[in-house]
Image (cartoon, rainbow, N blue to C red; front, side, top):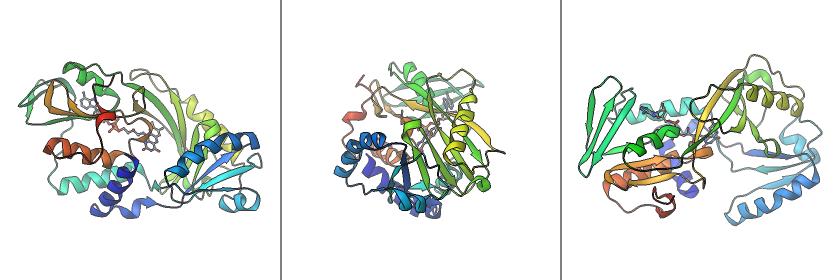
Length: 301
Ligand SMILES: Cc1cc2nc3c(=O)[nH]c(=O)nc-3n(C[C@H](O)[C@H](O)[C@H](O)COP(=O)(O)OP(=O)(O)OC[C@H]3O[C@@H](n4cnc5c(N)ncnc54)[C@H](O)[C@@H]3O)c2cc1C
């Protein structure tokens, strides 16, 4: 899936003219002790088996890749091939504009009811009107299981809520994505600001955000980059749609072959979006799938 993800994104970035929004300056994972570094090694060995290049560094090399880091970080791992994007929202909008140029249409409405059979689906919108579809793709993120249940499928979708704060770009000169695995967050330089984000909160889809979590990450960021100006930030909370085995659901609804499910991408929804798009297309057109779809089956639970 991850190989397909990379290939599909590269193709989509080229076709949609959004390649300049891809950043290829790598990532730097940081450790506060030899013990933490050693504990990471089995994970790096696994990545090596999948052909991912990396370099463990320390001392001047570490300071060179990210000047201004707190001395508490004694080692790091640089992954030169790690890719990030200039701004996920702007990339999403640009890809959507490309889809529109190909004939896609957007209608914003809440779907209250969904019903389907062999031949198609009927959607009932919140305003009471209906829409008929020959094929339906349910890709409603953390809310998808509510629609799937109406089609007779019980899928144990949960949400891992995450938080971030986007600071002005002038907050600190961060050279590439910094990953603090021991603390569960990252600092990412975007074209539109410096994003300090992560955290996992099992808080469901109803409760209001608890922005103390964003503030806690920001406090840590100030310790890790002592010169960081933490003022003027914009806080955000989002819903990662997650399944118990951390693998998305991609496949036909068991009781309604006109419906395709595509949700539950958890922490990797942006990364896997183009691959999932391709798999949806193959399912809808009845083509052979690019990867074995068995692990993604909606019936695996
Ligand atoms: C803090 C944070 C950091 C993240 N970082 C990364 C990262 O670095 N890389 C990465 O790959 N991923 C990352 N993710 C994960 C990624 O954001 C998600 O996996 C992705 O957004 C899921 O996309 P989706 O289209 O499935 O769902 P969503 O983006 O949630 O879209 C679903 C849409 O369906 C709509 N909807 C739901 N129900 C209905 C209904 N009944 N009627 C009408 N509309 C409906 C919702 O309003 C929503 O607009 C991160 C997430 C968070 C929270």
